[in-house]
Length: 232
Image (tube, rainbow, N blue to C red; front, side, top):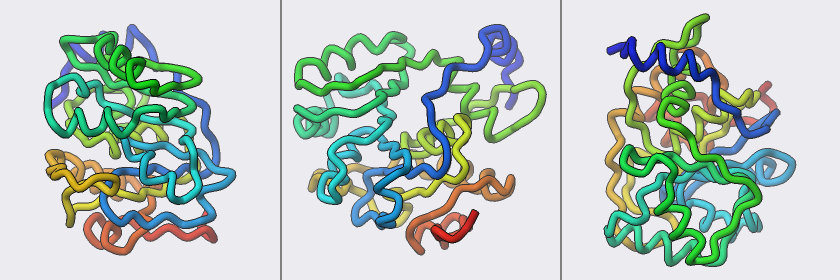
């Protein structure tokens, strides 16, 4: 359903500044056993979701270029505490924080990250209207961006951010509808965005946008084409 009031407020606010990226982009989620084409690990923008960068270290990537992170690590949940513990001492290039309504400046998240020594070169805290603009400018392109509500996972948010920022092609790794958990821990991370993510993947496919799955299972589950370095 279109939210006219939010659409008007977002139009008056204008488009948010997007992190610089061009060419092919790898979006990396935290699903177990990710398939990552080696050619994407050098010379391309790498965007990770939440704590997924931990799984890239074994592939020789010390820090991603961009990290999209949900501001929920102070919610008291065991999985949030686990992410904080594991991210201690890590870094990213550009940190994009998606705020909660009750903490629009992500002050709690920023304090927690500082306490564990998680660092970044630049920080962007998105306004809630900016988040809607990113989603809808990609999923419903047109001269006027009309806002509809979506609740995607952070991996899908990273995909939409990459497309909005002008990525030529987006390769998606570490997102799965067949397995729970996370690649960097044995804790039970239950997927809670399945329906929203499936709907967004279907929309991306129907629009013919340049989004590719790096593994056959995700390709089969979403209808996205498999990544090939020869495509373009």
